[in-house]
Every structure is written in C-alpha cells, then in structure tokens.
Image 1 (cartoon, chains in turn orange, red):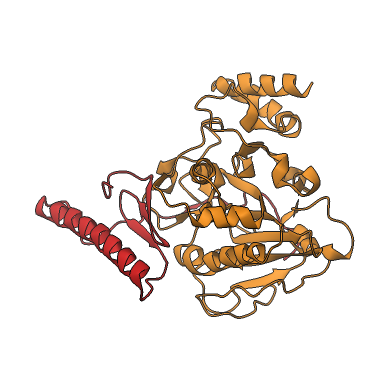
Image 2 (cartoon, rainbow over the protein chains, first blue to last red; image 1 turned 60 degrees about the vertical axis):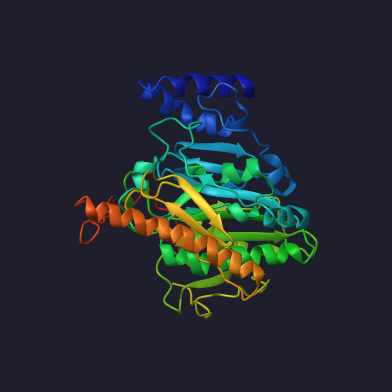
Length: 290
Length: 87
C-alpha cells in the first residue's frame, strides 16, 4: 500500500500542471511515502540514503501542529534525512546520527562542492539558486557538510533542500561554533542523534520564494548518557548577548511544534543539561528567553 | 574556479570555505596556524584571493564594476504558519 501511494505521488508530481491533484495528495504522500529518496521514478534522482538510520529508534521527528504538515516530503539522502516544506521551501528538520568514526572520516574530506536544487522535489516546491541570488542571506546547511564522512554524503549536503537563508555572521560564527561543539560531543566517544531546523515565528519574510527563518535550533540526544537538549538561536547578526540559549526538548516542542525525538521519553525531555559550552568565536553569553 | 560566474561552486581551503555567487564571494571562517599547514593554507588562500581580484579588475576595465552591489530586499509575506505555541 505504501509503495502504491508513493508511486501515485511520484506520477502526480511529474505532472506539473496537475497542481490541484498534487496538493490533494501531498499530505497522504508525506505520511505514507516515507522515503522519497528511495523512489527511482523521480527526475534527476539524487543518491539514495536510508532515512531511518538517522532517527532515534528509527522514529522520524514528529510534527505536532497540523499546519506544519502542508506540502511536506521526507527526503532520504546519504548521511542525513530531511523533512522538506514546499511552503517555506526549506527543511523543517534535518536529522543525522553521528559517531566518532564518521567525524574522523569527515575531517579528511576536502573537495570542491556545488550548491544545487533538489530535483526530487516538484519545481513549485523546491528552492532554486536564483531564489538566493542578489541577497545578503547565505545558504546555511542544516545537516552540515563537516559532519559528512564521504564524498557522496558531502555532495548531498549541498542540496538546497538542506538549506535555509541564514544571516552570514550567524552562520559563520555562532552557528559554526555550535556545529563544532556538536562534533566535539561525538569525538568524546559518544554516538549522538542530531536534529537541526529553522523556526518561523512572527511575520515571515522571503528571499525569492524561500521563507527566512526567525530562529535556528539544533537538538541533540546522547544515548550513552541519556542526556538531551537543544541550542536555540536567533537568525540575526550575533550581538554578543541574547543570541543563544540551551533549552529542553519539551521546550523546543512548545516553541516549534516539532518533536525531534519522539522515541525519547522520561525526564531527559524536560532537562536542559549543559551538555557542553560551545566555544563561541562571538562572545559567549546566555540568552534570556524571549 | 570561475569567480562570479555561477552561484553553485564551493571551494574548501583548509577550514575556509569560498562560496561562489554572481554578485559576491563568501568566505567562511577558519584559522591560519603558525606552522607548515598554516603556510600551505595561506598560500592557497592568497591564490584564490588573487584570482578574485583579477576578476574584479577585469570587470572594472570592462566598465562593469558598480560602485556598490544592489541588494535584493526581503519580500514581506506575513506568517508562513503559526509555528509557535509560545516563546
């Protein structure tokens, strides 16, 4: 049944003119077609990945608000998995399972890469290079290139379906430090589940057709020690104060309507353990909740 | 890399990342350490910067270099969806 639904969704998406029919199927497709990247029928097919291996206990992050689930499609790429929104033309979340070997392999990779649109998505739903052209917003990775262990996954990380419009100094300083701190957790010897995504709070602007997130977050869970939490940052030029805070998984769910780890139960969801202090290139200060 | 000729190419030089766009090159941060590796990074980076400079000079010689790049403004759009229960 699941295969039939994705076949339907694929055929539908190929018929760009059948927009209404596609829209009607979108929600069913998102729920049933769990692994778009594994469908051979998509034009310009990207290499396949296995979505479930990126999720804690194989359970994908869960959308807790119905309105988030418009035009969403799960994309399985080598090294990470994304739930893409055709409303924002960004990921809603991007999930990875990191372990020390993977990070050590990543450190050795260094090759030319290219940003490119994700042709697994219907044209009307995907970001194009032109959307970002002429703006000061950077194309910010959700699952970062530096987490990827091989050429194929590094290449896949540059798909625009893994990108959000990100303020340049936020991306390069604050966010880079948080990504670095996450890899640091892994290199201490623990396997870490990571889910990263944007938040769209208040009035949302667009660059081209792509929605600009107000916030960017990264949730982590360390199965070895049972600790969990999320970095929560404002997508703006870091000011040195109120730029970031570390919150519990439950708090993240309350703010975004996205549960990064549905398989996680118990008190670890409510605690915001100071897992590690990112060594900010920007000044490090706690951010009070808005 | 053909600087400013496409919006897709990315080069890694040490920890630095040079992203090509039509109206700008973005250079993501890294460190140049005071050692052999740092020297190699500095040389490679200098070569990239030289190529960027050459392209800008060529643009100017062709009368195509504006005083300042025009930045596309963000478009207002209201709420994409009401994401938050509270903040």
